[in-house]
Amino acid sequence: MKLGYGWILFVMFCFSFLPSKLIAGKAACHNPLFGNCYGVLHTCPAGCPTLCEIDCRLCKPYCACDRPGAVCQDPRFIGGDGIMFYFHGKKDKDFCLLSDSDIHINGHFIGKRSNKGRDFTWVQAIGILFDSHQLYIGAQRVAKWEDSIDNMLIELNGMRIRVPIGEGQTWWSQEARLNIQRQTETNNKVRVKVEGLFEIEARVVPITLEESKVHGYDVTEDDCFAHLELNFKFDSQSEKVDGVLGQTYRPNYRSRVQMAAAMPIMGGADKFASSHLFAVDCRVSKFGIIKGGSSREQRSTVMK
Image (cartoon, rainbow, N blue to C red; front, side, top):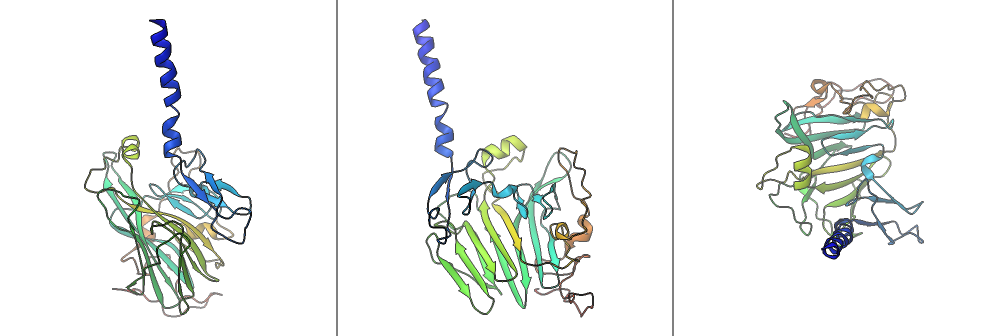
């Protein structure tokens, strides 16, 4: 009897480690300039076991959602000042994430009503305005998640962009100075860059059954709420940059969120609200204002 009990404990002990190994994600450096690190696979850290990034300079994995400029989860932001906060917005609405004289970024929020009196929300798509261009990056609605299928839609000026299949493959527009590179075999993770303006890493991820149970999302089988996780890097901002995320890059910005709260929430949804994903009519819009303070006529809606 004792032997049987001991054997059961042994089996439970051994196999208790298998799930973490099976679900552990891998990541590699995609920059060939870092020869000693390029292509080397690393196991993702415990904080983000299934999806992480690699710092090619240090050749170490890190959780992208913990870096400044991150927008992840039920929107959890890491500001340019390094301070974490939540901005829930409202489902099926658009909000200004960043607005400056030469770039404007709106986010489209999806979600569902919770029994706690607010919407659970996620960023489903972003609309980026720069120069005379409109760039759309969005997660397509899917019922059942499959990693092997392209779940990201990218459009430039209303035309769909199809990045060649294969990790590391790129698409380039000389006119827009836009470079898009696949970071995985499918289009679920890309790096988008406009030289001298911004760089964005965008990933499409679903709400898993485990997340749904833990947080009470009550996700059903007809929609896995595929959404974007984003990392922004901006090459230059004016001192008047604004938006939910943009304001945190101002040199004189002081966060108003309650840091001691379990979930520090950024308010002010009304002033960040936009009428459309490509509208620049939010109250904090700076798009079209010449750097230095003088202004020119702004475009209230760029795309109808």
